[in-house]
Image (cartoon, rainbow, N blue to C red; front, side, top):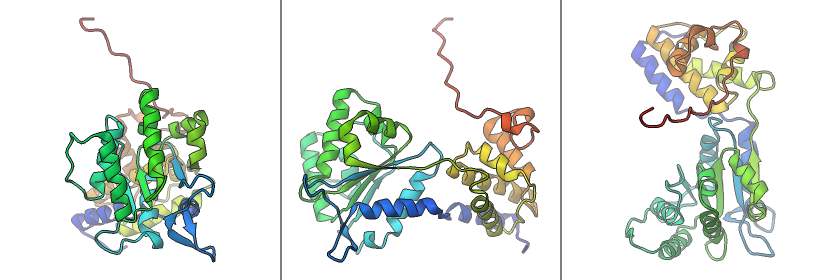
Length: 323
């Protein structure tokens, strides 16, 4: 490996953090994305939402994965790289993405957030909810928008009263109807799947794309390849420990996004140490920092690492004042 200064290696770690690692999951998303697009007479997709021949409504998509799985990056990359969704300049916005649902998740706040994303700022907070959504619909027509994507979509439909949920459904449904109809993509955790199963209207209007957890056996070749690529970016030799991938997958709660982040942090520690090879000890040091765990519960140090329970624990109840 070419020798680099610590500063150069740290800069390389930062560049590696910006790198996107495509997998077969991207192909699955592209397939679903194309199914949401209208087709010309020859069957080729075009930059317009596909509408139901009976109702005239566009269809939406739930992209579902546990927290830390990386589905947000996957969706954003898929939209950004799709050849039919490239902006041809100012006044053309084929897709819009909210990084999070508004809090509190009211229909007025959501309408304002999407409106701001279109580049429109000349709207008062005193504007009525109906006025905001009417203006938003007009903006989407002007911008030839095809997709509106909302991250943490489970917060829109799962944390409100039944009345607010129904109201939110109506507003999202309205976006998928009539002139300027768009396809709505909601990114979220398993709660989205439960909502779809519970509510027939939601189930009918949205396709579902759920991703499995990563496996150290099934995905061994992919994960090892990513690990070697990231090490090469930083000019550090890849690790040789035979059980590292298994430990890393377990430490990452079997989530693809966390696998990437854990590797990046370990690479940063190796770079700061001037190490020539990424090793288990670098992951162990990062684990101690992130998890604040004793040695016996450090996934990268313990002999019985596979028995360490990493499931989320509920927060302890608050003690009453004065107790």
